[in-house]
Length: 192
Ligand code: GLN
Image (cartoon, rainbow, N blue to C red; front, side):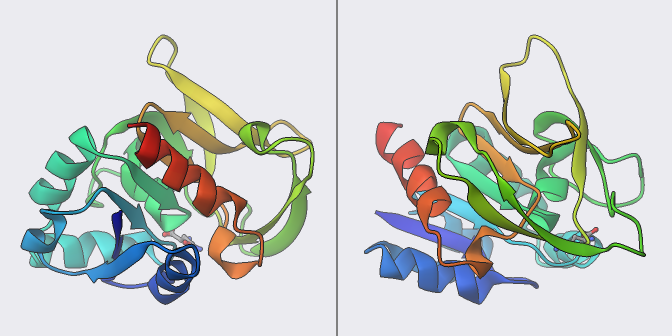
């Protein structure tokens, strides 16, 4: 199995090492042709405006959209923003593939980073220690589009969703030792 990690900006190295530790052939993706033989792709956290701008410059927006229409893609944090169809900002380039509405920097500038234990439905009862860094949240999912909510904060705010072969998480699972979400994504690819 070969999984790419979009490596334009942000926390891509951590995802590559995590995937390699799980026995996956992982590569850093910067060029459209690198997408060709991948089984799946991770879009890491970072700064979504920068990732979007570089994706436009590198001619990656069309190829990424085409890839994500067919094969599994997991966006974390900025990657979640990049996958969403609505982020309330028109000028910022996004892929616009998941039927979710996302609010960037949802926790404001004061409490911009925090950690919490999250119950993530498909991972069972053991909580997942989640690191949020200037994180977005999903404010709304469109009804009837097959968007499953996988995790919510205690106040109900949505921080993980899956829509078919697309997965999005608002936090940084590559920054903790828990590899269950990476394993979950690998299983999504295996099950096709
Ligand atoms: N706040 C960033 C953005 O708007 C996302 C932060 C992150 O990926 N950790 O893109």
